[in-house]
Amino acid sequence: MDEGLNLALDIDGKDDDHVLKKEERSNINEDSKIDQHETDRMVKKKTQRIATLDAFRGLTIVIMILVDKAGGVYPSIDHAPWNGCTLADFVMPFFLFIVGVAIALALKRIEKIKYAVKKIMLRTLKLLFWGILLQGGYSHAPDDLSYGVNMKFIRWCGILQRIGLVYCVVALIETFTTKLRPSTLTSGRIAIFTAYKWQWFGGFMAFLIYMITTFTLYVPDWSFVDHVIGDEPKRYTVICGMRGHIGPACNAVGHVDRQVWGVNHFYSHPVWRHLKECTFSSPGEGPIREDAPSWCRAPFEPEGLLSSISAILSGTIGIHYGHVLIHFKGHSERLKHWVSMGFVLLTIAIILHFSNAIPINKQLYSISYVCFTAGVAGIVFSVLYILIDVWGFRTPFLFLEWIGMNSMLVFVMAAQGIFAGFVNGWYYEDPNNSLVHWIKKHVFVNVWNSERVGTLLYVIFAEITFWGVVAGVLHKLKIYWKL
Image (cartoon, rainbow, N blue to C red; front, side, top):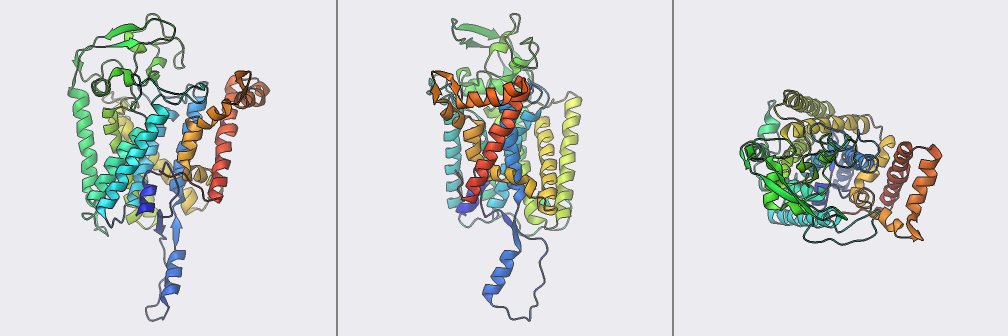
């Protein structure tokens, strides 16, 4: 059980518990006399690790590094300023999707519910701690060598905090309903759904809370203080007084966070500043226009409370894919279910978005965004499953597996810039004269005579490839960072 729970988040490591019995077994003659040791050996040979889980997780980490490090020079892969979906906008829902898949496998057998709950809560607390430490403002890596945070402006929400919340809710539902789920499915197309009705009920409740709050909560006028470095703080007021608004200024998602956390504890550089209403550099980053509306200067929390409630649905869909993996033994059965559900979700999202009913929006974590990203995640997962676990093309994806097995390490050291920050701390005369800056400038940017191309190649080789090799070495040494 301990190893199984180490798998449940699987942003953090490798576990031998996520193995499933191979689909086709040889029939053993009942009359043959085979000793118990031989039988156990034969059963063990018929098991295999589902490598797609690690590869999918590794792919998500790679995308995260790519968009974080190269998104500044390639705005098309950076987060969409408001409505829409870019490559960067798939990272969070992909994490939550694979967390759900892993929870289903890790908690398929629970002997002691109290022990499982204790493990789930402990892991949630660890995620919250690391999230606040890395994204709360304490760490300024990689370029700023200082550390520490003014508690008046600490950021309470973030990537790991959202993963922790979704993991906690989905895993607890799976744990407390363990005696209600069947060991085998009944016949029927919807049997897999009815067998886990309480998981879907939890997702439906999250959907109701999000939708009712988003479209019925009254949002009054609100104000904030813009703390610009070098200038006197200036207070701005945003005029609202409305319900059901899903634009940047007066949405219920921001209002809930302002009431719960306080505006000083938000992310201070929201991506909506890339909108053309805010900057002439749109869709890239640039100085705020003098005639920009006041909300352009306001902070916003993209991983806030109400949007995280909606994010529970991403974990719920992921755990459903895990249940399919457990109960359907044939490749074709699994793929038929996964792919069809993926396309249904995509269809729902496209209809909602292009009818302007509920636009795809990562900042609000809209329902159309949930459906669109979960649908893409399901299809990508299916494609990787075909290539790796069905056709056996595992070698080309080994670096993704290695990164996925040590994803917490790569997330902290690469995506959060902790390793680069450590290297930057050893400089000559000027902080810009460090090994990291020298490699990027002289090996990549100057050689290609292009900031864009040089930055992209630096990210591919000095970040992604480097950490793929490190993760591979650690895998050979059986060293993994687990929460």
